[in-house]
View 1 (cartoon, rainbow, N blue to C red):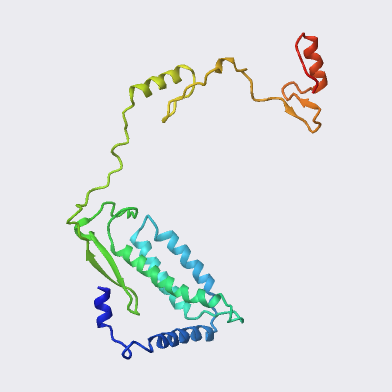
View 2: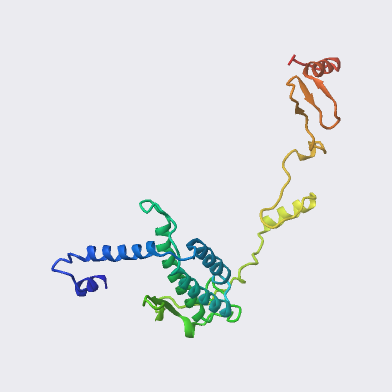
Length: 258
């Protein structure tokens, strides 16, 4: 298709010379028009308003009345865009001018998304319309096409080729109940008998040697700021390392001086 287009495209000269210069001139005229504008609208406020409307109304859950209101809002923003002012004296390194150029493009694409969603009265994939909760293959098994016209997007459709892969219903309610293997069932029973809480997933087993652990391990001894002192947070007192060694010797045990 691209080759056929290239063969039939109208050329400016034998080798297409002049096309680049013409487009460069056209883009420069658009920039100059924006720079000359001295309206009262702030482009960043328009950007923020558009983002909020699109986030609120044109994401996963969609309602036709909100989609229509969003398109009306976009038309309002596009009208206000004609009165923005590029408030930047440094045109050589300005960020406002590129932002203003892209803002207009974003508004155009926002209308494509909004009108495409408004015209599709069904729920498909991750996009859900509560008023039309089911997928409608009879009317909407097709791709949405939007063409630029200068007067707003022109929406058309193209049928989807399903000759190789037939469409089927997405049902996420099946397969959630899995059978537990005999080994997993036995481990789960042992974990339940040990007093551990039983949770879904891997069976819980007590580690070897658990019966020899002290009951209260929540307050272990910790070093204080004085490295010669060990703070016993359970009893609230402490002994120096030398005193601890003496206690061990008095009890008949072995100790090394710390």
